[in-house]
Image (cartoon, rainbow, N blue to C red):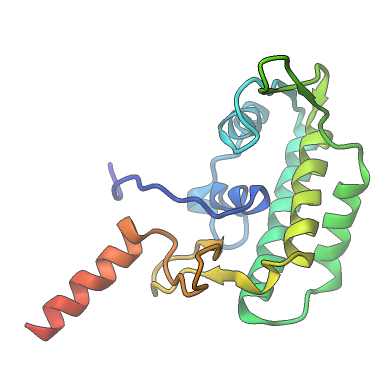
Length: 184
């Protein structure tokens, strides 16, 4: 059964790429990190790029779920302009304290990943990205999609800073169609 079409969604930051993978409390139907191999697949498809071979066990998958829940809380608080809660901050800071993934520069100018990458290194890299985002120049531009039935969060990196939709192809277009139909 198909629930809709796929669409291009770039949340603008690595840490926000983890959010659409689901969430136990509020978004269990979107859960895509069910097994350790799912986290490995997410890492390979993320903006970290191909060639990242991460070892993941069940404990590290649970840590990824905890980090994702913390990032949901922090991103939604930032989008509302609310204070950041201490519990999710502690989860992000603990993940960031581990050694991050180690990148290597290759002679052809491309990036590769050092061998022996672990899920804790992956989660540290994601958590450090979150710290950079929540403390950086775009911290005030973290937005929730303006559609009433969309839960996605993104960084508005548009020049004007007025992006309202997770994706113009999805939510923005649906809003335009509704507005057009309401006028006619």
